[in-house]
Image (cartoon, rainbow, N blue to C red; front, side, top):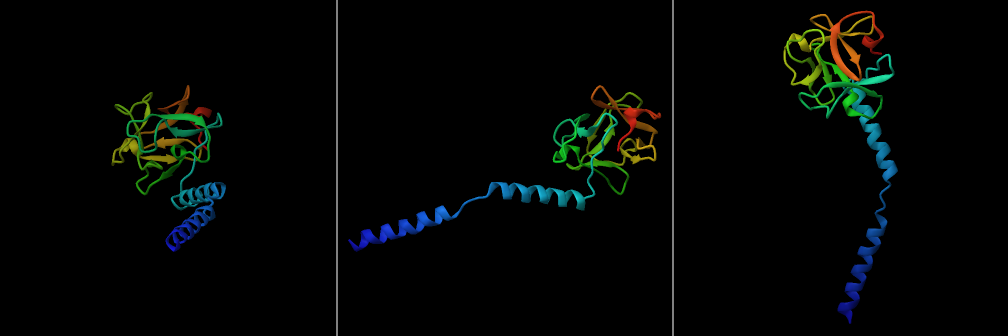
Length: 161
């Protein structure tokens, strides 16, 4: 009988411990969101909003090589809408891939994500007219929801706030 009481007591302690662990998922979610905000600020990550009110976004995972750039509804939490300029002047996604121009890098070419390199097609700046301009003088432009490189102009489709 003593042996049986011992097991009952052990089970009671275990059951009480299980009940004591109550995860507050809302609090955990808020802590995670705050952590992402701190990380974004630390890495100088930001979004680029086009004149149509949508944001520059990787059309896939932020680290997906070959993914095209698109214009989509802004979402402050979306990792594939977070960007920074690195010390080499490259426009880098949160996934550490760089904005590049597909093919020969001419006007009309699609903007895509590639492994970061020293290519001139990966050098970008945000000019006073709020355009994203590469070293070859092409600007990122919204074209039917996709992002292409076009000859720079004073066009709303090339403005990124």
